[in-house]
Image (cartoon, rainbow, N blue to C red; front, side, top):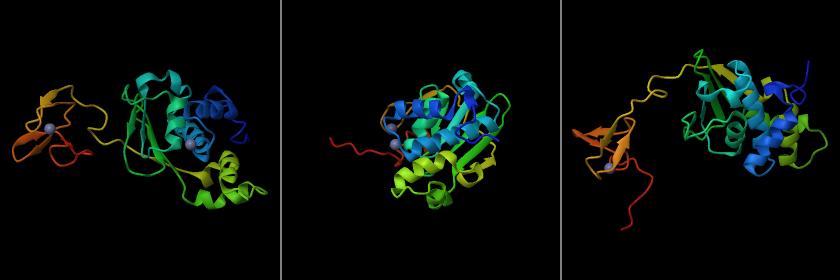
Length: 200
Ligand SMILES: [Zn+2]
Ligand SMILES: [Zn+2]
């Protein structure tokens, strides 16, 4: 059996994929190696061999805005603007890969135990970060990742193309993102769920 570093998945070697991820992200880090492994596992499980050519067939939900997310984006070509990349701010190193043609979805998460195992998979490497980079590359998939079949809940993919105006601030709200509060249609900031405060 080929090791992860040799497996010619996505039509390219692990090194080619890692190089592409690093180029997009800006540096080599454990997250890039992890992101490549997550992408390989996710795409394989949902039967998408050429994610860059999958167009809107492939949708990825990422649960963290960290390094690995960049690797997933670089290798799959999903993007926020194409609405094929969905960021959920859960703070978890996990991503769900969905094949929209078949409806098959898998959630791939990094096992918390993998970090502690890194030393064993990178003998002789004293720097923890360097050890993770080496180890995440060769660690068995079962040790590194948890893979679970998931179904996507209604409303997370298809949103009606409607536009209403917030009855608080008057700004337009697309795709049914308004919140009903006391009989008024409000944008999320006006409903109290905003990320900013107006300073003037
Ligand atoms: Zn990084
Ligand atoms: Zn508003």
